[in-house]
Length: 80
Image (cartoon, helix red, strand yellow):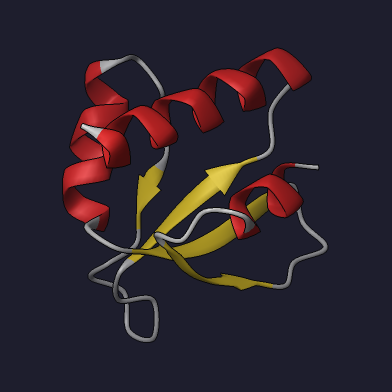
């Protein structure tokens, strides 16, 4: 459900297919989004400095409530 919701956002450039409990998402302004999410207490991993992961955040799949909070925060960031 999280991947499906993220694909609806125009700021998401690519989601790497995954069978793990996390997803790698290429986004516009990843560093700024990372800082914003951390300021809200939402922890993701900035993978931008890893080769072939430039512009990507690694997002661990959480509970339904955590995923809803994450999506709301991402939408808030890009609207502001």
